[in-house]
Structure formats: structure tokens, C-alpha cells
Length: 205
Image 1 (spheres, helix red, strand yellow):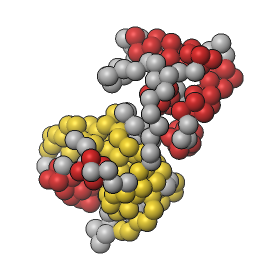
Image 2 (cartoon, one colour):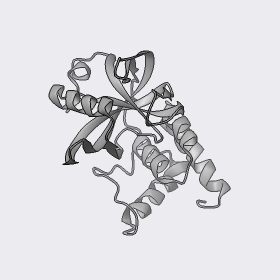
Image 3 (cartoon, helix red, strand yellow):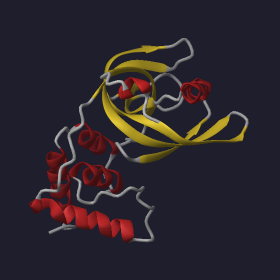
């Protein structure tokens, strides 16, 4: 569900943050195991309010324990499935929504990071530049490879943003490289960076 603040056209939100050692991209999926009380409470509140939380890559610190220092750009996480296999453990499946930039943040007495964030104005759908059409074909081959994890539908192999985000998730990049790709505003620039990576490794003509 789209948060009410976004549906009403507001560009800022106050949200809880979940710093992780992974990057969530818009339209991407992520499986999370939640067991710390601060995050169990966060999930319960988000379910109750039908709201999202923010996923940010950890700049310094750790996922467990003291609040980690997050990178300033993250992605809204919308819960699509919640399961509790045993008391004190929640298994989540989330889908990435809007990107955001942290404006201010605080730490609650329970150790949960909360932040006022500014949503990025996402660009309108753009076709793949002809010179980079091979990236869409590559992603299609990856999607048709039964040995790989399925790419979540709906597919949009002709959309520059969608192709860039999905390749950023699936190529063997380190987390910091993925973060840099997330922060890029221009879908064409993101695709060019990915094409350069693939070309250097002779994985694409």
C-alpha cells in the first residue's frame, strides 16, 4: 500500500530506519529476518499503521546492537508478507518503493533510528537508449535462466530505470557500488556505469 503521505503528494516523511548490510532498490525485493525488539516493535507499528520503513546501507557499525550509521540515501520498504515462525522472530518480504534522502535523524530510547526524509522525484519512464539496448537483452536472458532466482514481475525490459535497478541487484557488485548506483538520479547514467562494468569484464559487447 502507498503511504498516505505519498498519496497526498507530500515530499517528506518521518519514518523508522532499518540499516542493513544490503541495498534495496525501487521495485526490488528483499527477505528480512527480524528478531531484535526494536525492529519487532517497528514492524508491528508499520503493520498497524499500514506504513513503510526505510532501508539504508550501513556506512559504519553493525546490523545488531548499537544503532549503525546509515548512508544518507535509502529506499522505502513496503511489507508484502509477514510471517512469525516462532515467538520473537519475524520473517519479512519487502518491496522497494521511493528512494529518499535523510534530512534529520534521531534515536529512540529503545535504540531505533527514526528520520525525516525527503523523497526523490523519480524520473518518468524512459526507453532504453539504443546504444544500451544490449543491457535489456542481457537482463531478459538472466530472467529466462531457470537456475537463477526469479525476477519479480511486472517486467519492464524496455524501461531504463527498471533495467538499471534490476541489473544493479543481480550483478556481482559490492554493497558500496550498489549504493552509488542507487544514488544516481539519471537512469541513463546508471546504465552507462553498468555497461562500463560489463564491458571491462567482457560480459557484453
